[in-house]
Length: 290
Image (tube, rainbow, N blue to C red; front, side):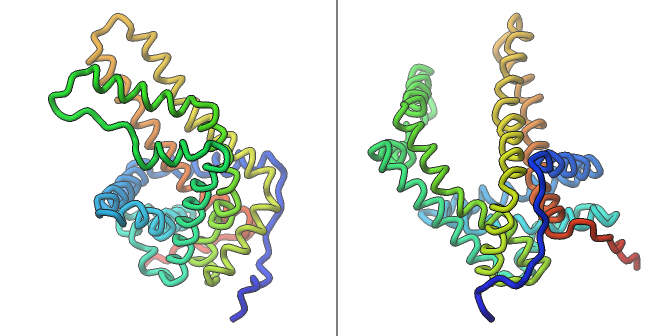
């Protein structure tokens, strides 16, 4: 089979369509909140377990993310047809053309690795040094001063203008890979493409829809980046008269559910964006009931 993509039809949209993908994902999440959060919890437990593998853990996480992400694609496909997300769907990627999904994960991992290395061209290796030698966390029994020093060191690095430019340059370098893997798992699972075909098709469709993708990314920056900071700031003002322990518990009680909801919606949006771009206007066959 040739590596040249088959004639996969996709739709080009205006910029505002990026918001529609998130709205559709949020509506799908609202249909089964508890089940989606359970699926998300299983996803992160698996990733956290993989990270404990010495030396290879971080690489394994990057490689298996597209495989595990298929679980959300399968759950969204099910919900769209009147069903409910199932916990067992988190392993759907291991049963759905794993040989094509793994290379996507490899390309994703290599792309991020090369992008981080490229940051050294701008910041002279400061970002790489920070990632490979982060400030040590205070051990049990250490004073609060040690912990504060570690936080201060981290903030100093992240506020360094050269490091910020390095991160920006790394993000630009990673962009082609991110676009190539955006729709690729769905194209493998739903349209039976090979890994190379899926990534090339994903890249073509993403470039053609750069406007809605840019709006999607901006909206995601607001809800996932700015809103948590705003929530923490507002709670700090409202609870200024309470003990620190109470403020911490209340803040976590509000912030963690919000972050979990946003994380689930972003996972679902991988399906809603794929569905809209590659299957616009198609009617749905309901799930068979046996």
